[in-house]
Structures are given as structure tokens and as C-alpha cells.
Image (tube, rainbow, N blue to C red; front, side, top):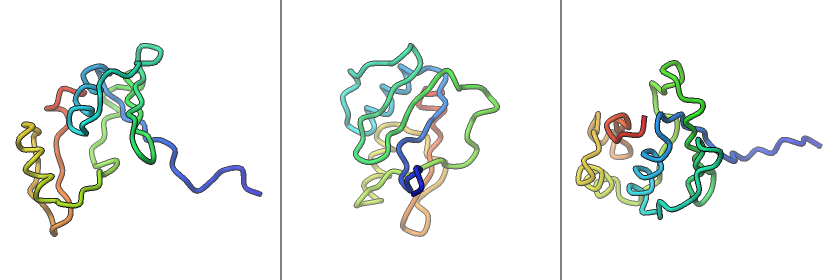
Length: 111
């Protein structure tokens, strides 16, 4: 029997300031930003499904993502796009093929 399951438990995101990143993601996702920051550098977003782990200890310019690492689900891509515009998130492309768009998280103060 294989001891490794075929499920993702968490995705680590390197951030320069874990408190700013926590606040930004919680604001975007409608989550309370009052959770504990562990060891002074880790915050686990309380999501349904795999966790997003914000970690400032692993941050360095060499660890920055140059392509999307994950995507959030939405039932209405147009409404999600408008919501991100209202939140003043820098959107680096418009909706593509009616299914997805990308944002620049650096402008959200999370790196």
C-alpha cells in the first residue's frame, strides 16, 4: 500500500510580509483575518479543500512565481473579475476564453 495519497494538502506561497499577505487574501476571500500566525512566519488560510500556506520564511526573489501556482473557483467569472477590479487588484489580463484571468499579487502588498 502506498503511504502517499493522491490528494493535495496545501500549497505554499512565499510572501515577504505574512501579516499583509494574510490580510490581503482574507479580504479577497471574505475570511476573518484574525487567525494565528505560527512561528512568526506562517499563516494557513482556512479554506475548503487544500490549504494555502503563506510563508515569509521561504520568501526570496528566487522563489517568486512567474506563472500561476493555483486558481480560485468561481461560478461567475465576469462577477469575479469585476470584484477584483473593485478591490483594486492589478489584473494583468482580461478574462481568457471565458474561464480565467490573472492578477499581479505584488501590487496587493503581499510580497
